Amino acid sequence: MNQESSERTNNQTENGSMIEIIDMHKWFGEFHVLQGINLTVHKGERIVICGPSGSGKSTLIRCINRLEEHQQGKIVVDGIELTNNIKNIEKIRAEVGMVFQHFNLFPHLTIVENLSLGPIWVRKVPRAEAEENAMYYLDKVHIAEQARKFPGQLSGGQQQRVAIARSLCMNPKVMLFDEPTSALDPEMIKEVLDVMIELAKEGMTMIVVSHEMGFAKSVAHRVMFMDFGRIVEENTPEQFFENPQHDRTKLFLSQILH
Amino acid sequence: MEKTYPDAYMESLKPPVTSIGVIGWIRFNLFNGAFNSILTIITLLLLWKTVPPVFKWAFIDSVWFADSSACRGSDGACWSIISANFRFIIFGFFPYESQWRPLLAMTLLFGLLFYSKDRNHWKKSLGYAWIIGLIAMGMFMRGGIFGLAPVESAKWGGLPLTLLLSVFGLTAAYPLGVILALGRQSKLPALKLLCVLYIELIRGVPLISLLFMSSVIFPLLLPEGVTINNILRAQTAIILFTAAYIAEVVRGGLQGMSLGQYEAAESIGLNYYLTMRLIILPQALKIVIPPTVSILISAFKDTSLVVIISLWDLLKTSKSILSNPEWMGFSRELYIFIAILYFLGCFSMSNYSRKLEKELSTEN
Ligand SMILES: Nc1ncnc2c1ncn2[C@@H]1O[C@H](COP(=O)(O)OP(=O)(O)O)[C@@H](O)[C@H]1O
Ligand SMILES: [Mg+2]
Image (tube, rainbow over all chains, first blue to last red):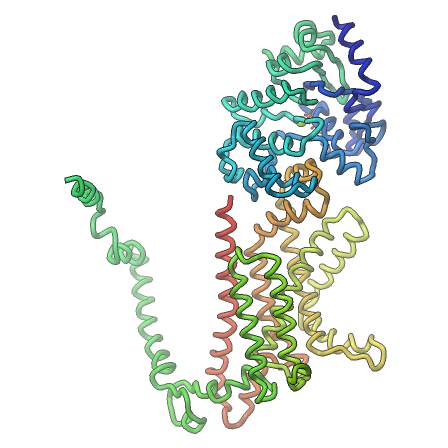
């Protein structure tokens, strides 16, 4: 069965790959934070990355939309290679949605302005259309009634759902999530995960850094374990959680499960 | 029956008389404890000693509209020095019969300023209104077209000159300061160095020396025969000087912004210019409204330093009246009057900034 799924993914590599990372390295000064990352993500594929704090998970996904710059190897997103070409970077950033741990909404703008800003200024959508679209996505994350409020007036869970909707308004081809629920109070985690699960059902390509096992089991095609700047192990969620191969994965899983 | 119920309810909630109203306020603020009571009594005594004589000098014994000999015979304030010389104080050497022109220009300026107070009016059309308004003001001052007699800028003086230097100076210095602050944060080393050098050099010298340089040294560097208007030189010095201070204040605001804001803006594909314009500057500039206004206020007052390069601003026109033997010795009244004018300018600026701050902070 494992064999089958890997064959399927291999066939898609030719035309269906959304993100392709080949032997990618990154250093922070002397510190070798990513040590040879190879990763292919297909259209519609959902990947969950876990691993201990400081292992380079955030850095990896931040490299994908060039919030961090890699120094060696190759990253191709939707057929465009990430180089210093600023136009390409802006194009890729418009195609790749990013959701941050601390939401990073724009506090001086209302919710609906937060959502319509990107479409209006980057995609050149007329304001009325952009706001209509914003309302559609706010409705989708079940928060339409808050449209005229400011981010500071919303709870953490609501803010994170707004942040997801803000990314969706750009009509992205991939969504990156960097620990989207780890800054939330426990009672708010579910409302955010539910939105993400709905998104997964619609076939969005997603890379999610998260330790939420239930979420990983229900939506991920593959789960990866990172440690010391490498992808140590990857597998289907069933295999990954039932039958981890590496000692470090076992140790890590035992820690998050207690 | 229904109506009496809430009234009775309200009545029962009223606090005791001694803790509200005037008496409550006085007890609470002026006589709470022995020390405060003593302070209050001393203050009242001081006020009793000083206020009545000053009031008597300024309003009861004072001479308002008379000639100087009437003033010399009186114990009170000689406000006549202002009423008799009003037009010279305000307009300086501007030709007497044409003084309606600077008056009209100032009216236009105040009208525009007043209209711009309301943030709902901040639209593109207001920008055009300002451009047209400024051109019209310049036209009224200079003359030379539409049958207006030309008036060379050496004759401009008094309040219009002070306002011209301040309004132009401050509105030009602010965007320049913001650009310098952004340059100082730039990733391009050359640009960054240039901005740092500029800011530190300018902040290292007093405005007076910049004004001297602009009027004495600068002409030496120009080719023979080329002259630059004195007012323009002073104006440039004021703009360059103020911009450096604005830049430092704005830099503080920029540093207060979290990295997450930049990243969120970038991750939806905004370029540098849009990130700054839509996300970073609106927040950063709002944080620094109070220190910015302090700088603008002191720049407004510093325009009075242009006397040292022989421009006849408001302060200079007033002082020159004191050298007239007829009015010699009435400096107090004159300086009080000028102080009131400057105070009105500064007070309305700080008042407005507080209003703006409040409006902006209720937004989130
Ligand atoms: N901007 C930076 N400069 C220097 N070191 C950094 C920077 N960002 C992250 N690091 C370091 O890189 C390592 C990996 O960070 P990160 O990718 O955030 O880990 P994770 O998300 O897995 O917890 C950490 O040791 C962190 O201290
Ligand atoms: Mg992280």
